[in-house]
Length: 267
Image (cartoon, rainbow, N blue to C red; front, side, top):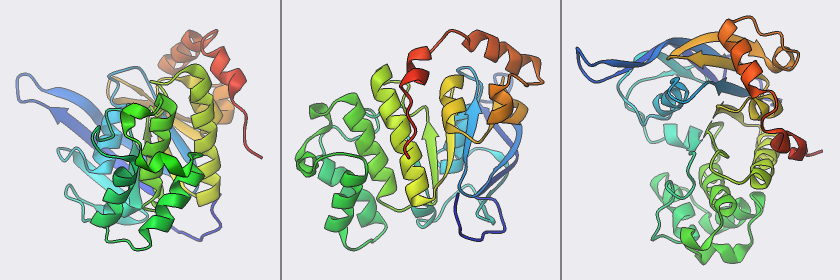
């Protein structure tokens, strides 16, 4: 947890709604979602595909500008259009590490781009530190994404987000496209970086084993609505109240045991 004194939550979402299309074919992706993320915690959002969880992250990151409601980042309300400095404060790691990296750019260029936009100095040192922090050798700087494994590409994507020194990290199914053994490595890397850099995180996943290992509290989404909010201790104890959450718990039993067994927390 962060020792920094901050009166406001790291992130607060109030009555967020998102709809796509026009009448009569409107699709309501998110309806009336409200929650807050405390400083230094990992807050999970879990639900089936299409439940609206990734849409919330896209709104918070500024990628989706069609929404209603209110969003506060460290006590400051943000609108649909975000100033450049916002993207230094809030960064996102996407589900598909290959699709999120420019295929024709080297790792060096990928990491450099955000610093150029934000007019940050000491760029060579920052690149070296970012690669070191995510466990990649320095000679990876001059490789292209197709020359990397899936796990290595996701490490580059994490380094790209962290190189801007954000305070809030948005994680959209960051391991779902990776092999089981690599998933454990990336999840534990994220836990380590969260503590090392005192980050506040929002983790979206359909996997309850991942949520239980990573998060402090979570929201359960179904059909665009948050149906329940609970802490991970109650999730592990099976103390969910909403029928949909209990259904998710029943469906998860017996699955992803290999992931859970491979997860080892950093000291």
